[in-house]
Length: 88
Image 1 (spheres, rainbow, N blue to C red):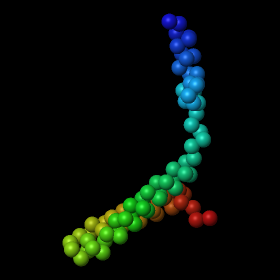
Image 2: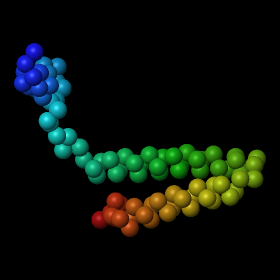
Image 3: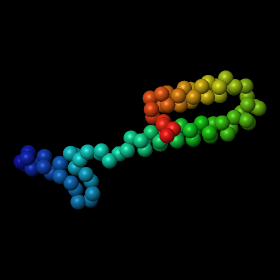
Image 4: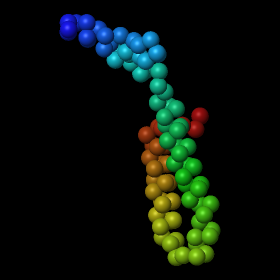
């Protein structure tokens, strides 16, 4: 088998819609990824705090919820500092 043919076959596009190996994924939006990560973290935070009332009544784990809240706030301020979140 000719090596040039196999290489050209590898970098050519398939008929079923796959892109070739040389095609760049530059269409992906980093801003969308930032928004997605921010939403997932906020969603997890809200879900954990919805259960906090029942947990506070049954267990003494105030420290862990406070520690989690501090970590989330530090991450939030870190994202603001580096410009991932802009309030414009």
